[in-house]
Amino acid sequence: MPTREPMFEFHASAIAGTEAVLCEELREIGLSSVRLNRGGIPFRGTWRDGWRACLQSRIAQRIHVLMGRFPAATVDSLYAGARAIDWSAHLTPAQTFSVNAVCRGSAIQHEGFAALKVKDAIADSFRDREGRRPDVGDDPDVRVFVYIANDKAALYLDLCGESLHKRGYRREAGEAPLRETLAAAILRMSGWDRTTRLIDPMCGSGTIAIEAALWAANVAPGLGRARFGFERWASFGQEQAQAMRDLRGELRAARKGEAPRIVAADADPAMLEMARGNARAAGVKLAFREQSIVELQADEGAALVVTNPPYGVRLEADPLFVRNVAAAFCRLHGWRVGLLAGTPAYALNMPPRPRERVPLMNGDLPCEFLLYEIP
Image (tube, rainbow, N blue to C red; front, side, top):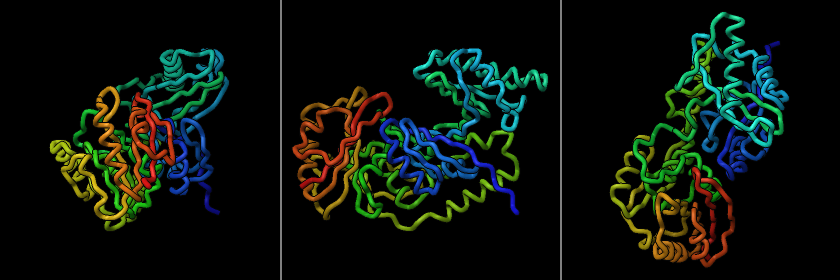
């Protein structure tokens, strides 16, 4: 009988408020034991499943694999638990590593100190066994993540390296760039069927429209990445590299043909040129339109609007602009409109009640995704 591949526990981290759509996405990818959880989504699978999550998830921020859990009510117990884990399968003294920690509701509250103790435990375990230890690096080969909650620690390895929102296509960004992962999340929240015409009338650097085109064409977002973190681990040899090449090939072959018409519009020609460059880098075709939001008309039958209008500290929205935006959307009879609103002014100026209202975080800014059916 063939040997069954070992199964691991993974965790897909999420921007607060996007957990439900991330859970839905991971189930669509075909991962197993996917559970809805605050802060991120756990699932089980083989190493290949972890790689697939890195390549295919549009919404996850990072993918972690669990290395161990243990009580950690004291610094000594944290050190002992981290030292008892065998790190040698993935890390050697010739490589570099880093440790980051998050502490919630525990006796250990200082995250920097917790990370330092785990770093010491890993280094000491190598020094005692092999006589030398791996160094800590700014661009580490292996990234360790420590999560301490209710005096219990969970230690993970980060499969990603850089955050998954860094797709590799964004050459330029505006003053307040939207993370690609958040753009993908609000597209899914909008209920878009990937065939209906879609418009972003305030497209900025084009992130929402580009993410929509990639999703419609079934392009795995991780294919634009040169390398993931796990490809630098000691456990990633020639056999694993070939399996990864095969997986990338399968995903490239799954790309679909023509996407629906996706319009990226903006009043600023410089922003439109930036969006064009980013779309070229992403390998997608969009329809670009230099147009003010007040000129938006329901001219070609019903469509879906998904947009990230100006707001907040970095892009101040004046009251007249907000009223003009609301008036423009209210003219789109029979359309659906999804707004990532960082100020309550948009909801206050839209006469229809939103069909859905989802609190989100855009970086450090609290905001809401508002979904309207314009009567």
